[in-house]
Image (cartoon, rainbow, N blue to C red; front, side, top):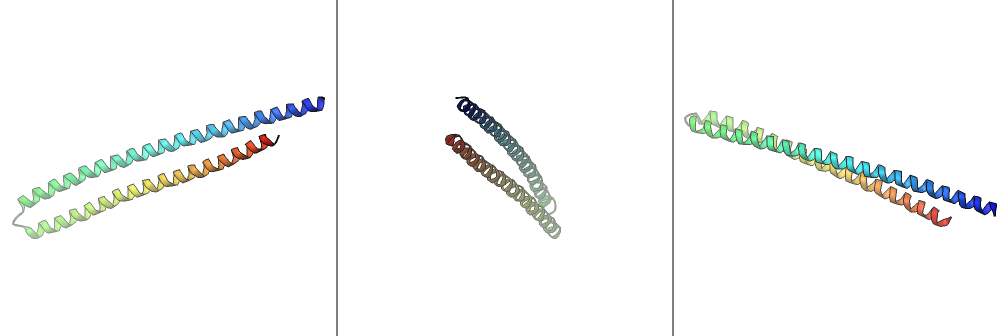
Length: 136
């Protein structure tokens, strides 16, 4: 009888321990998800600010080009050189925006993959824990 009570007591202790471990892992995952969301929101905000800045720069460049074109009609060669510089700069800006977008997407994809791997591991661990509990 005492042996049976001792065994039941150990099983209850083990059950409490596993539940505590599960709860801690769940809190840890929730915390990581929150951190990932915050990082994604920050990256999205930064990307949006970059796009807005670049749009303003593009508008400013366009306005500058139009003004020079009207003012410098007699200097076609000089305008062509300026236009080429502006196009090159615009291409650089577009490439930078695309790189920021691609880098952001890669970071999001990596974080999503990391989360999915972590989630899968936790689910496997939980299945193992559940199997251990069911065995006892």
